[in-house]
Amino acid sequence: MTGFCFALTYGVTQRLLALNVGELIRFGNGFDVQVFPGTSLESLRLRFGDAEAEIRGDLELQELQRQQQEQAKRQAEEARRLEAELRQTDALQPLPEEQADALPQAPALPDAAPTAPPALPR
Image (cartoon, rainbow, N blue to C red; front, side):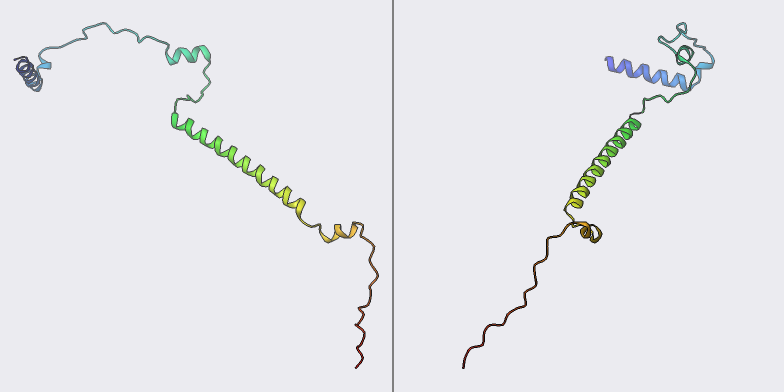
């Protein structure tokens, strides 16, 4: 029974609005318009200055900046690792000829002519 009453009221309301009854009867505001509570943006600008600054409320922008910072850290770590590897390989590589000539060398042994084995009697 209650559902029937609601459906009937809804149907009557829709038909009255379709007939433009609003022109015959003017409905005004049922309450006084009041100021929205809280601090307005304009009052904040007056209090803290009129310098334009980006409002940091965009989560996608913050996530993008975080990802860029992480990528920069990873690149810096990779550069440090490569630099350490280069230092290690430079320490293991032989010296160039110019530097090798400057190093003291061990005294050379006299060249002994190869001796042939003695001939066997026949």
